[in-house]
Image (cartoon, rainbow, N blue to C red; front, side):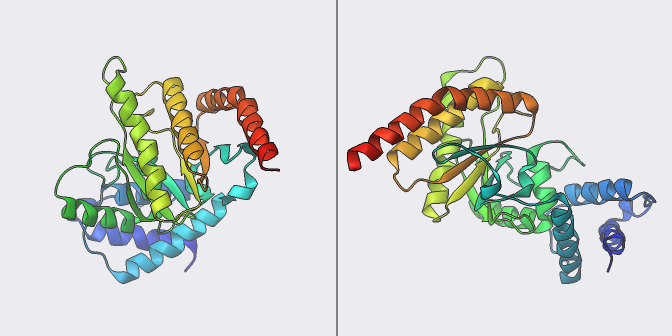
Length: 275
């Protein structure tokens, strides 16, 4: 099958599952058809699916991933010992795990083509990711609390795993509990990744989008939590701070740059003591 044929097959299959969707006309332009497929995947509930669909879906999404281009850790400049900063689409990163800013239902975003990171990750991974998340939540029987982390396979993403964490939602002023919960998100992901013997992890800007955590304060908490963890753990993970917006890139660049000298100085002192 060509990509166009796969696209048409996937749309037809998803429409055939629901009588209300069958009347939707398939657009002629590829861009519009891709948006339709993503929308149909976004709204699909977690339920069994044919193996033929998964085979075609996986071939389609892997080709899409290849066209976007895969970014490995070696492609990203080291900004501090064990810390990298990269601006771009987190679904392109070939690290051991990327972090998804999930909601408490932990099933991904059901809003068609929504701009949140949860939607982007589930759309690029494929519908198997929602199915695995659903199995986890059925077993858990309660909504996911903020500050914890769960791990799933990555399916059609270039990373190996996805870590899902629910950040605090800000309604009004940021209080100490909000800050502690955000720090817990980063710490829980680091500890889970280490427990699973992963070597690299990429964080998105947890809680700063739809959950309205102030960007600069969130970045300060993220960096401090990661640095404290790395300081306490000698065989610590390689961490990528992944940002998408220019404003977040500037914030992380300034914060990491201001403490980079001190970090390298501490490393140099430690090396001198061991010689």
